[in-house]
Length: 217
Image 1 (cartoon, rainbow, N blue to C red):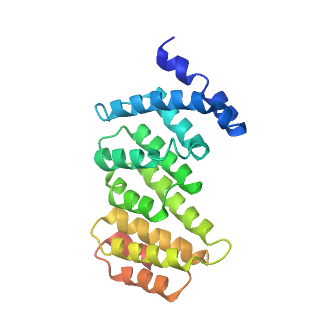
Image 2 (cartoon, helix red, strand yellow; image 1 turned 135 degrees about the vertical axis):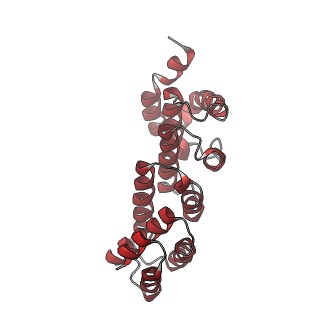
Image 3 (cartoon, helix red, strand yellow; image 1 turned 135 degrees about the horizontal axis):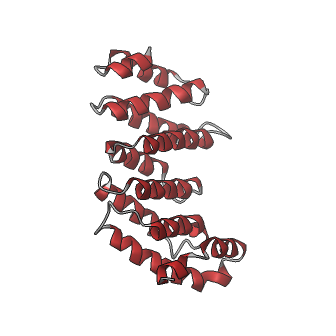
């Protein structure tokens, strides 16, 4: 059994132990985190290669990052940086694992909503990966819905609406279509049901992108 296998074979068990008593397993986590960092650095040398052990480590550290905020304070930026630099070069499955790790960390309040939206729209929609696009779109809709559950988050809504409006004016058909689909979904769910949203959606009727025109009608 390789060293990698020995370090990753009990990750689900260690994860459960950490969630029960994070202080008691801090040293175990630190050891595992060092192993993760070493593997993650190797990713930049071979971004197009699938690595099962690395994928398991990415999932593990993202699952318990909230238990060790000090040790993991640079984790989200590490993920964001590699996606920015190697978005189209990464192995599809590894890329999706990293995106799902960021989504999990966002759901736990460890990453800013706007920061993640910018990464997804400005970098990851360049990738020819339908599952990735579906994952991103579903997350953004669910995240905005969650942020408006108790009361309207007007500040966040306004910032995101302006961001979506900017995207819709761009020439990237995939990004424009996703921004429109997100706004339409939120409008129908009565989350973004204001005149600003309606006007942005209406403006896409004059889009030069045919499938965007069709979706807006």
